[in-house]
Amino acid sequence: MYITHQSSLISAAFHAYDSIAMFGYGGVPYFALSSLDFKFEDHYNSIMRTIANGKEFENGWGTFPGNSLILKNGDDISDVTSTKPQETVCDKLEELDLVKYGWQNK
Image (cartoon, rainbow, N blue to C red):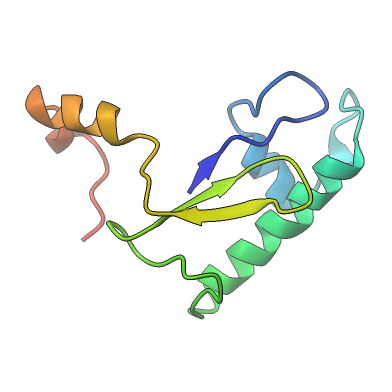
């Protein structure tokens, strides 16, 4: 999953933005919410419930290294694509033999 959604607080999604969405924006006093923030929160929580319940996604998103799910602004918040936004960075980490230090799902 790759998040390009822009929050109403700053110009881009920030570190822990998805975690705040998962637990609800209500407890963040400095956050001026927009309808897109609420839409992101609802959509993100729907994704988490699907994962938690072990269900498959109707939009074709599956396990790595299949397709990527990109969350973005707009009415069509999700985009499933074969493009992997981090592929260049991942290739470089592999080239430098640094992948072994990251989290590996097996």
